[in-house]
Amino acid sequence: MKNKSILAFLLLSLSFTACKDDKLAPVSPNAVKPTTVTEALPHDTDGPSIWINPADASKSIIVGTDKDTDGGLYAFDLNGKILKKSIPLKRPNNVDIAYGLIINGKKVDIAVTTERESNKIRIFSLPDLEPIDNGGIPVFEGDAERDPMGVALYTRPSDQKIFAIVGRKTGPSGSYLWQYELSGNGKFAAAKVVRKFGTYSGKKEIEAIAVDNELGSIYYCDEQVGIRKYKADPALNDNKELAFFGQKDFKADHEGIAIYKKTDSTGYILVSNQQANSFMVYPREGANGNPNNYPLLAEVPTSTIECDGADVTSVNLGPKYKNGLFVAMSNGMTFHYYAWDLIQKRIDEGKK
Image (tube, rainbow, N blue to C red; front, side, top):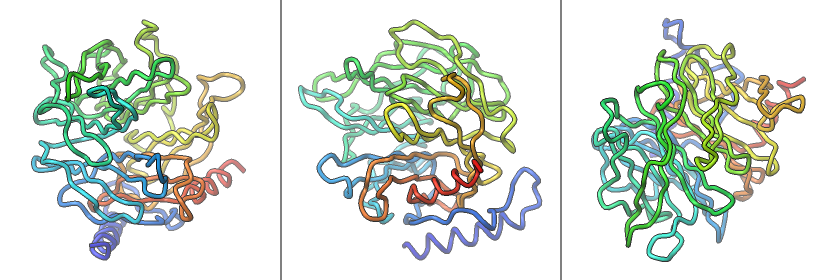
């Protein structure tokens, strides 16, 4: 399977290099090469998320979506081998992970994905990837425009409550994103909407969403327009946009967002420059004393083709990933793993 994955990647690289569509760039000759390429999925990969094994970080897993009517969530080990597929899902799109949702009095780590064709979010326990949502939780109820796509989870530091921020294919500006508080209801997970917010340009869609728990921030990509920032805690009752950046840095679509945490308050925000096959890097803490100022630090070309989604961790995952792991989806039904040091080297070079 691994050889097939690499062959598919090479063939797609050649095909995109030959493509004459000026919106698509070839993979750069100096692109960062992946440390590992996963086994290929049957249909179409999208967002990945990293679950850190609390007992042994070297046994952490990557959970990724296979985006099809007969798709599902897949768990991979750190060598890119498929460990398990979830129950079949109707076009799962993005996925995110949180730790310690209280179900039946016990803490359960969870993966949450959007199920587009059923207009639901689906919740699975980790690492066993078993459904705990009693068939799914409807989202955007009462709205004509539903079709959920992006999802990100926020764990509030003050009380460890977990919230899901859900985006969709299209929706009204000002209430495009809905935020749900997750909880346990007997042996199942439940959710209630607690907030509606989010400016939308109307130009394309909002799919990529990421949350910085420590800094209390939500970032999302208004595709082909820019990256928007809001406060994450719904109890603050503050739906004011804090920042709107990256407006002139991208070839076309702004896509997957990953946050690398060097400390509790510093690091990088990496955003997929989808049609350029690269990632744009911004300072997590802001710049010049302004936490809402995000100048471009570097552009990192990667081997991923038209990347939709990405995730990153700074946790030591073992010898290959001592300073963390960056994972991004790629056309060819695979995910690419990069040792963080490879990305950091390019960021440092880009700053010079």
